[in-house]
Amino acid sequence: MSDNYSNEKSEYSLLVSDFAKLCNTTRDTLRYYYNQGLLLPWKNPKNGYHYYSASQISSFFFINTMRQSGCSIAEIKSLIYGLPRKEIEVLAEEKIANMEKEALLMRKKIASMRLGMWILKRYNTHKPNVAFLGEIPQMAYSITPVSNPRYAYHAADIANDISTHLSKAHNDIDLPLFPAGVSISYEDLINKNYVYSNVVSLSLLEAKEEKTFPVPSTKAVLSYTYQNTDNIEKTYKKMLSYIKKNRLKPVSDLFSISLINLYDERENHTYFKYLFICVE
Image (tube, rainbow, N blue to C red):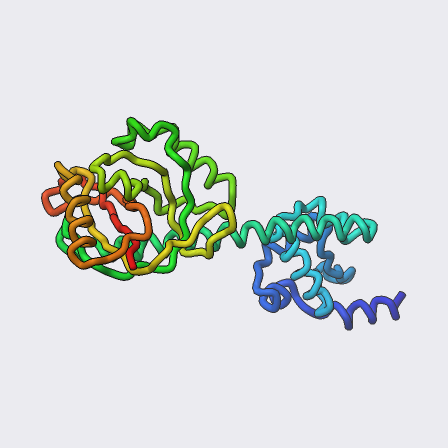
């Protein structure tokens, strides 16, 4: 018994505080793992102190990794206490798939934020309702056709279509959610029939076949406007006039992206809109 005690004492030589520092964790976390039967220190029978072994560091990080992957305490215990190899593989693959999905979702959110901020930085860089030529990022876009475009003049007219579009984006990791807006077909635009044809969302991520589509050109005729503008149709006409005057070739519909609620210096409520038509 004395030999066993000597061996235990030599291997388990790290105080709880020292082991916590090595693992970059807290004593409370170690106590929790101990109480759950996940990571067991050696208890000195003479003084009652707990000691850990350096070899348990890898066990700590294994437990932490599995927790971060979404494993429950019960699942981790089953891994530690002899779950059959096949079941371990199934559980691990399931958690890996979940983490990969979370990583893709985070990438989608980051791309949305970057694009939204890119557009927002253009706020006040040009006078509102003035057409100009500029560069846009290489973006992809998703669409939901408006169910009744004949009467689609305002957001309220396409509320159900907007709901459908957003619901699809929530349920499909490949579909962008924000920034979002509408499109008007170029044919309707030149015929002064200003009805919405699609609900759209933009993304900086690569286009996904049959789900999102690349913008046909990064050169575009652009304009910035506000939702409370009395006559946005004048802005549409200015953009068409600019294209014609400069002998540009339109290669897309008009995209009208509503970005964010803003307030001017008089605290008037506006909604910043980013308009563009891709050209060559």
